[in-house]
Image (spheres, rainbow, N blue to C red):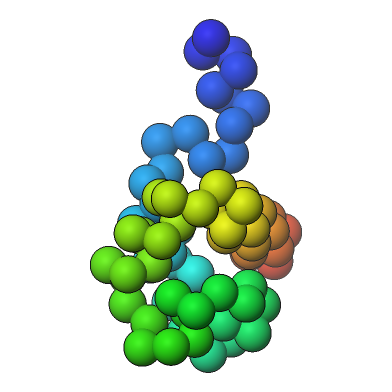
Length: 79
């Protein structure tokens, strides 16, 4: 099982950290443009986003995919 987790880029990363990182990198406006969900576009907050994403698997997958894409682009840019 440890080997599976080694290949999981989200292992050990909380959803709150993902949202904080995306907001820091993109801001709420751009995040709402990239992922069209109300919790990012109408009075956004980490708390409301966590509540929605914990209940909505398709939206959480989109957020996690954007986080992975962001991290990969940051890592490639730092070389």
